[in-house]
Image 1 (cartoon, one colour):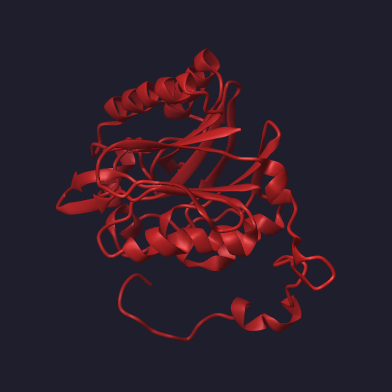
Image 2 (cartoon, one colour):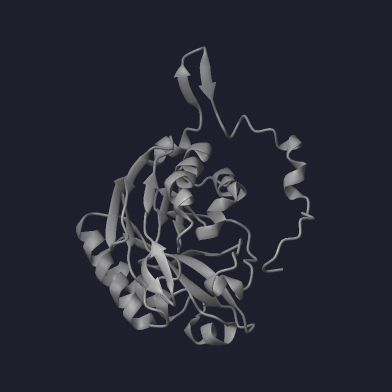
Length: 283
């Protein structure tokens, strides 16, 4: 299966223009045979809103107009698309969300669980839905968003739920280079899954975005990457069967590892205890 990641610029508050640009890229990736095309975090809306009041007019329900347009494009072109947007659940708040759609509509959605002190995340609502894996044809897909990748529990939960590919729409600013260059490979390797991080480029309200999108294999190796800050499309061919086999035999009878079966969850209780460290920033 061929997958594609669209590293693109996004315009704040220009939803129709952003969606049209995504559909144009989807036409290109489908012409190249990609079954799944992934776009950045908040690709439909932009990211650097400064208040809930400012962001609310650009948020939508799921399903809603944006997901319907993208689903219609998938119905016309074939294949699937995943992208970031702002979700409105009708309670005067907004969620930073990712949505997976196909020819028949919404397959699954995700609300960002870990929120940094940056952009819309300074004022958006914490994700309130459990991690979930979604069936896309023969492939099981899990979704995280940007800062979630800094918390290994996020991708581990998806792997335990059966994810074969984890997608990470993201808006990495300067300072996130280490994440782009190292963490994505690590998350893929430690969970034995394909992992695709798709960042944006351009500048929004004084914040630059660094690109450096990346697709990694279950052994942690880089399959495709962007090294610059230009618009670009990454492609990779993946085999879900490889991600299903968690046991890696390096020398028969002498050396094998399985990072799922070899866990010791009875020793991990500190992970689920509330922290008592107080740091400046969002409460």
